[in-house]
Amino acid sequence: MALEHGGKTYETDEEGYLVNLSDWSEDLANEMAKADGAALGENHWEVINFLRDYYEEYQIAPAVRVLTKAVGKKLGKDKGTSKYLYELFPYGPAKQACKYAGLPKPTGCV
Amino acid sequence: MASKRFLYMNRKAPHGSVYALESLEVVLIGAAFEQDVSLAFVDDGVYQLLLNQDTAALGSKNFSPTFKALGDYDISKIYVEAESLEARGLTRDDLMPLTWEDEDDDWAEKDSIHIVSSEALAEIIEQQDVLLNF
Image (cartoon, rainbow over all chains, first blue to last red; front, side):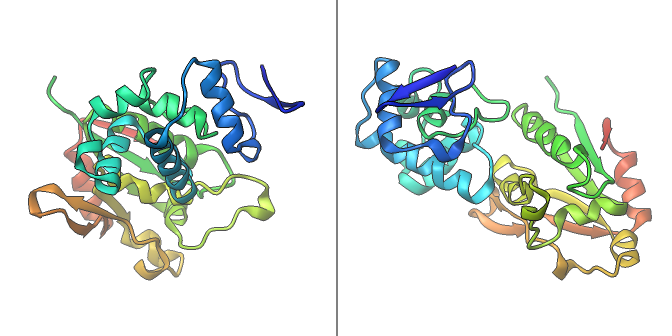
């Protein structure tokens, strides 16, 4: 599969995850969200940027349980709940947010 | 479902084969099921925990930073066989510091790596329900 944006073509897997991490840009993230009928606001970006930092440090996308705990620690307790994260990313916080963050699908995640 | 005791045995060097990465992925997937998970590193497996690994020349992904995420997955029992370290001229200082946070102790950061003798490791193995070799 591929994603067309700004006259360029980006390779994705069958679920729409970018194949090359280095292809990612904020523009592309917005484009992927638009294709899913979503619009990215400040709260979405907070989680997306958090995931990108996490990946940079640990070379994995965290499982949803780990993401929830880590978001609570980093962004505040009120945000470290699955309810908050599912409201932002209804298709599954780890899965959907990782896609927009240009990361691979998390290992063993929902 | 009662939780079972899982021990993942890692015996191979990290980057020459796919065993180390596969083991780590299975550990991370397994951790989602909230079992009692331990990891052991013996023989060349101890090289998996070395500090400052660099795989650029191999053209493969350096997954060693992922070991540092194990604490987030509530994995706090990482056993390294003392004899294997010694035979390779290594000490604890050559290994990555791995920690976890103890929820019952005001989130105190604690060491996950336990260096154990071969004899002590045999006892740990004895206590497991499931042993997975990589």
